[in-house]
Image (cartoon, one colour):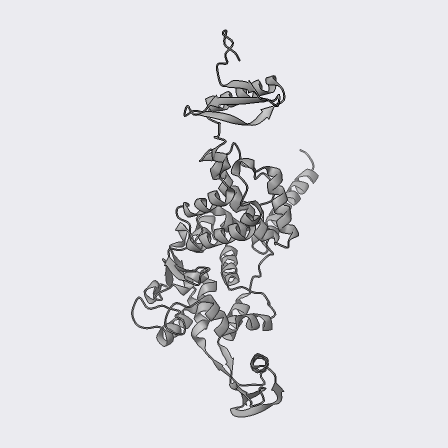
Length: 436
């Protein structure tokens, strides 16, 4: 709108040599800005100024100069400035940014990003073989970064990440073990065949194994040590070779499962955290292994992770045996130490127990250690415990995860269905009864 003397109340418009119109206007700080676009008609330029004025009045205006910052720089600062992020989360965010975001969008200015660009970026990720799960993680990171740029820093007017379902993951349902399978697994992780592999002068390998207490030579000569070792373990599994039983990991499997502990929590336990008289384990810390290989001792994954969990009476004898055999007497001694007495790494555990081969021989290829916690959570949910009690035992500070276990309990839906059916049957009977 123009004043009576012909001058505009807000901003000004000038005609360029090209014949197009350019706008200039004062920002909230009084500094004059030049519009990023030019307009074919003066009326279009006037409407643009009116829109900018309204945005400034409502507090919705964003500085176009600030929108020139590149996504790469802003996202890197965003990660470094997030308070309270766990080290492993920082590593994940940086990996997602450098691997899947920066190569595609890193040079783009924040103010130039659009929903169409984000949609094409996601399509390119999937077309290049990135899994739906990883693409969803990258999208959620980008959405969070741009949400801060829009709502806190007011660099962009709105978040362009508006692709329905792009942040959703659909992981395969994880296996749940029976109690018998857990006990079998706990015994298998410590079972080792008796034998050795020796390299011959010609570079081949000879396998010797013990059978009924007597050492014997395998008739076959192997080209690699790994091949000979796999045969030895196979012979131990099917009873053709004697085995010894190292029980140092048996208690770890049992406790992680039936107390619903995460790997980082169970590997950080100290002798003083176990109260076998009361039948409880105190969770107060967790190890996190960073992408650099560094082990960091910190608080559990969530605030609710600090908790005291009841231990089933049936596994307490195994824990007593473990403490007496493998754990030093000091209250601060690690309950499950590594080979040299330090913290036990997951990779070391997998190697020493031959986890991959053990679960494959049990008919459960691909079983993860975390599936033990999943099994424990399912057993807890099957007990009929209330939501708050489940949350406390699992170490969750939100109800969503605990509700998933409640709803996923085997047979729970049948109970609900049967209850509804009983009401329907009662209603049918009432309808059939004669009036009066």
